[in-house]
Image 1 (cartoon, rainbow, N blue to C red):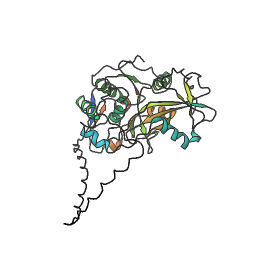
Image 2 (cartoon, helix red, strand yellow; image 1 turned 45 degrees about the vertical axis):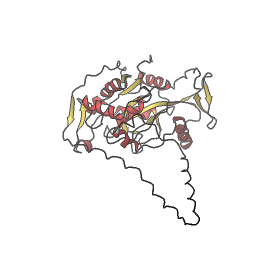
Image 3 (tube, rainbow, N blue to C red; image 1 turned 180 degrees about the horizontal axis):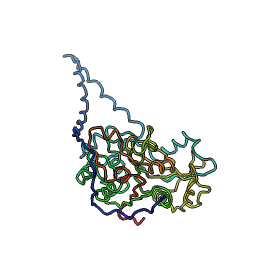
Image 4 (cartoon, rainbow, N blue to C red; image 1 turned 120 degrees about the vertical axis):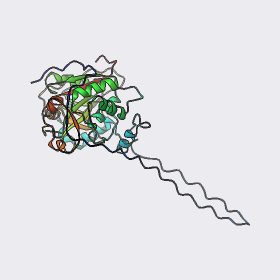
Amino acid sequence: MTSPCSPPLKPPISPPKTPVPQASSIPSPPLPPSPLDFLALPSPPWSQQTPVPPPPPLPPPPAATGPAPPHVFGLEKSQLLKEAFEKAGPVPKGREDVKRLLKLHKDRFRGDLRWILFCADLPSLIQEGPQCGLVALWMAGTLLSPPSGVPLERLMRVATERGYTAQGEMFSVADMGRLAQEVLGCQAKLLSGGLGGPNRDLVLQHLVTGHPLLIPYDEDFNHEPCQRKGHKAHWAVSAGVLLGVRAVPSLGYTEDPELPGLFHPVLGTPCQPPSLPEEGSPGAVYLLSKQGKSWHYQLWDYDQVRESNLQLTDFSPSRATDGRVYVVPVGGVRAGLCGQALLLTPQDCSH
């Protein structure tokens, strides 16, 4: 059963928390190593009769190849970001990453449909410890915040000060919404009752317009959604969707030159919205998602994400006994995460 989405969240009244006992301090991350110094070249030999000219200058280093590293807002001022950035990698553009996946997994996509890809490019950042929710929010924030961006360090500091987290974990979608509103200055709409029913159209229309969605789910070994009763609870950000449709609208779309049957909206051109695939159409909707353990996009079947999100009920036994403190809302994981998601839009957006 699906309940309608709740109204936008009001900042910030923290619900009472039930911290899991046992505490341990987190050692400060080590400073990054200093760059290696170049070895001094030996002085050129010379004689009293004929000076020997110095050796020619060294050639310039070869130009770097491959994708440029991810741009990280606030890197210069945040030691926390610097540490995490060392684990970040090249960021493929959303469209290129999806095309790679389509070529790799052709059997997943129904040949009787045409496919329309809506995607917004997100930076990548590899999480430190249980920071998957804050990293997902940081990535989403690059689509919501001013060009100066918001450092991950500030998200962590405010979340800790408000009592939302002890070490980066976020077990409450409501708290995540309050944090987004306060730090990113955006609108946050909490969806409850799952991603199906009327919430499904809200989610798909939100993604088609280019706005991010934060989703808690259970993470499998390959980062895809699975069902572990919340024991592998994790966060992802979705910033796009791949829709399988019977017909592509005539206005505002172009077919991909490399993959026939795949269409993209034309930037700067008015687009006629496509007819959304009906609920219950298997393999017709895929979310384009990122999470804090890989810099690659992933395409997740919508129904697989919905089912994973709906069964987040229990706190992980391994976390309960690992000697760390976790902030968990009253009612536990079921009350904080189960069947919930967060739609984020810029403050001045009427959508």
